[in-house]
Length: 282
Image 1 (cartoon, rainbow, N blue to C red):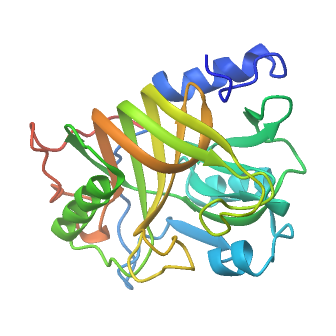
Image 2: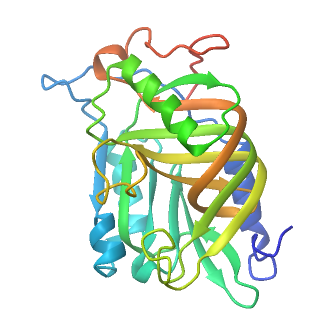
Image 3: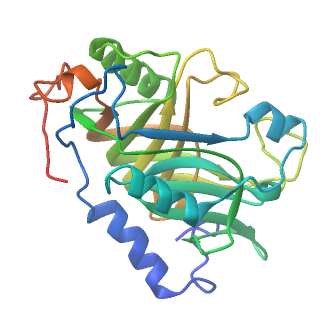
């Protein structure tokens, strides 16, 4: 294991087991929707946001805005028990927050060696910036090789356009599969993208194997939900830790997107290049 990976000397064994369970054991997937409301919005999906990128990362509004454990419990209850995803940063930018299937991963940088410790959230952990969704109706398609973050965004956009999604609003995204290479960072007082001269982050370099990538796709929201050169805000969970995704090469996997309400009961417009929709049990 690389020096920048999980700090095993600091982390209890159950944390490593928890990460392994998320990557290879969880089976939350594509579910049948309830009937849409008169407004056309699904009655159970709930997206909550706290803080904006520009204000938090550039203007210094890094104070705590939301308690993580309480929020995930609330979203899970209001979403009919459907698992929650989310991405964000801890208060004072002292780490990253990644929520996968209702499990909250908190990643922080620790000396010596600037190793990354990823652990389950506990009561009292708070975020300065967070976007999270509960009650999501996942529609799935299989994807093959993807050579870059930009290509992943293009593939997500292609499927969302086919689905008829409103790209001006954040859409939950979840990829589960195998990566050839992953680069990610964990903030340690400053964001390396918004403030390159600030405190250096912890880094995950060239991680590979089973991964979960979660977050949101939205266009025209640079400085609010995304960095200026991105159309998405994505985090990754690997066997080496969790953090903010910077670059990726994927081998294969399953891409999950939020289904449009009027299609969630029937056949989805999402079609795999290798065999079409593949619904799995909740």
